[in-house]
Image 1 (tube, rainbow, N blue to C red):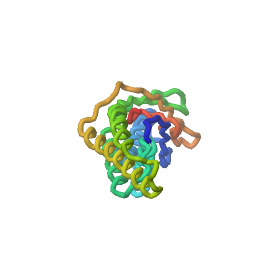
Image 2: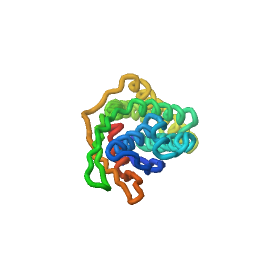
Image 3: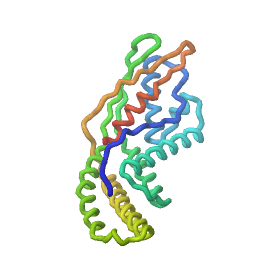
Length: 222
């Protein structure tokens, strides 16, 4: 019934990725770190100072980012029957995972008067890789358990109830695995991303969202 596949995660940051200039390369470094801190650590202080956004706006954007990840979680693990309790458990998992995101923002290099480069070193959280290996074994056991039923004379209502029970067992096993392993997070080898920070004619700094998507693809390894 289930299979483990890989999906391309798309990170949708609903943030205003612009800021007013204060001091060249130092500002570029501070700006990139502020974007990451507001996205992963739910720490908006510097981001609000730079972008003149509000706590309410950034809290909402943070929650939207978590919501996107929760939906990707259920899609990745092919969980179909999702109740409120299950959803909130995964929300908590991702908030705890993000608090353990590990990255280092290096000093910016001035490329020109309109561009800086900031290298971000990311240490990917390896929890998904570990759980995928476990679930590859678990799904075999689960399928064997449900293969013992006689489906030939089963009504559609009985089949649906059995499938929901199967789906719930699958979901419970995965969520429990995350909850267990989140207490002892391990990291993969560092991945580095070059972030290009552009400066326009009004001295407004910006970062392309595609670069943030690339960074996000490394935060939690798949």
